[in-house]
Length: 507
Image (cartoon, rainbow, N blue to C red; front, side):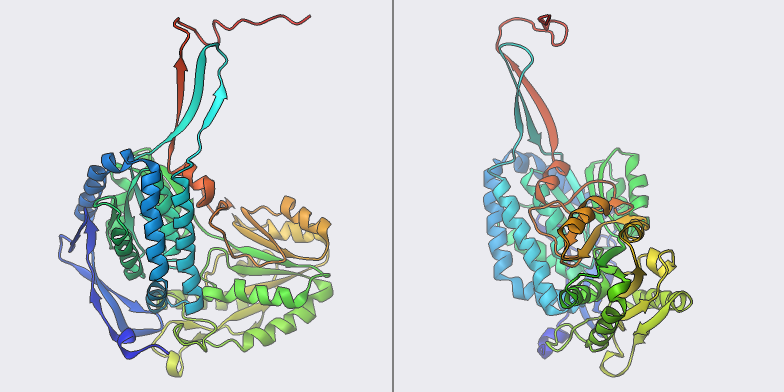
C-alpha cells in the first residue's frame, strides 16, 4: 500500500517558459485530483491563456537556432542522458502517474518504460538521420536528399499515457532539431511537468522544451492557431482532432492526429482459448479500457463462443477494482466522473441492444465511494451494427459478436469507422496471413491482444483513427523533419535537366 505522505502531498506547479518556472499571467489556477479518491489533490497548476502560449512559443523560437545547429549526434547524447534519468526515476514517475491518472502501478511502469525506450531509440538516430544519395541523370552532378528541422512544434498530449505519449512526440521532434511547446491534458499535468523537469536535469537547453498547462479552449486553441508554430501533434478524441485540423489550416501547419479506435480481437475455432482469454482481459480491461488500442469488440467463432464467453465471464467477474497503488487491484478507476457518466450512458444503450453478462454499473460503495470507478463489463450476442459495437466507449467495456465464417469476420472487423489495431487468435498460418492482408488497421497482431506497441515500429491507424501520419519509429522522423533535395554540379557548365539529356535510340 502507499504511504500517507504519498497519498496526501500537494504541490504547486508552474509553467516552464524559456527555462524559467512561471505562474499564469492571469494568476488563475486549477487543481488535479486523484481519480481513485477525489479528496486527494495531486497539485495546483496554472490556468494559462493565450499570453502564456505566446511567451512559450517566443522562447521556443529563440532557442531554435542554437538547438537546430547543434550536431545531431550531440543532441543524441543529451537524449541518452535523459533516458538514463528517466530510468533512474522510473518508480517515482510511475507512482505519480498511478496517483494522478489511476492506472495500476504495473501498467504505469510500462508507460514510463515506453518513454525510456523512445528516448534511447531517438538518441541513436542522432548518428543516423538517414537521407538519400541517388545517381543524377546528368554527368558530373551529385544528387542527395537530407533532413532539416522545421521549427517550433506544438504537442497536445492525452491523459491516458501521460509520460509515454509526450515521449513519443517530443523525442523525435528534438532529435530532428525542433523546439517544442507541450500542452498536457488537464487531468494529468503533474506527470508532464515532472517528465520535463527530468529533461531539463538531463541537459535540454533553456527554451528548447516549454510546458503550458490549462484548458483546451484557452491553451490548446492558442497553440494550434499561433502563426509561429509550424507543427501540431495531437492525440485525443476524433472530434477534437477534426477541430484542430480546421484551425491549423489557416496557417498551413503540418498536423498529426492520433484519434479513436474500436479494436477487434477475432477468436477463431482453433484458437488456444486460455491464451486468448489472458490477452482479452489485458487488452479490454487494462488501463480500465482507456486506451485507443483497447479491445472493445470480441469477434468469436460460434464453435467456441459459448465456452469462451463462460471463461471470460468467470475471469472478469473476479477482477478486483481499486486504487492502482494497491497491489491487490486488477482494474483502477476511470479518469473522472464525467467518464463514469459517459460510460453509464452506454450501459443504457447496451441493455437495449444486447445481453449484459457482467458489470454494467458505476462502483460507488465502500472504499470506492470517493473515486471514479466503473465495473468491468461484458455484453454478448451483440449485433455488428449496434451502437456499443460501433462507437468508442473508452471504458472497461467489451462486446462479444458471434460469427460463423471468415468472410463474415472480415466484414465485421472492417465495419467501423476506425482502423487502429486488430488481432486474430488461430493456429492456422493461412488465416494469420489473411488477417494481415484483410483487416483494415494500422496495427495487426496474431495470437496477441490489440495492445503493445514497440518504439522502433510506426504507430497509427487508418480511416477515422487519424490523418495518415505515424508516431515513433522511422516514420516519426519523417513527420518532424523537412526533406531538402540538394544538387551539386561539378561539370563547370550549364546543364539543363530534361532539356539537355541525350537519349540513344534503341533499334
